[in-house]
Length: 97
Image (cartoon, rainbow, N blue to C red; front, side):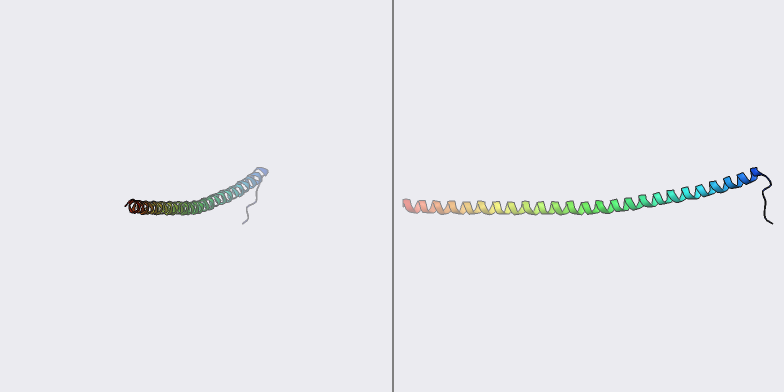
């Protein structure tokens, strides 16, 4: 048996109940969408943080490699200078003798 409203007040209550249910469903959908977008944004941020960390690690590795190369080059220059000084000293001794 279909329930019929017997007064305007009952009709108003039925519409109000339906409107509140509809508004609640829309609110829930909006909140769920906002939560999903926030989770996606957090995941994207985590991915970008990981990329940035890899970039920083690469830059640090390059800087360390350059520093090591510069240290080796400086050591080679010092060894070359020392060798030249020994040769000059030997020539000076040979010239004096």
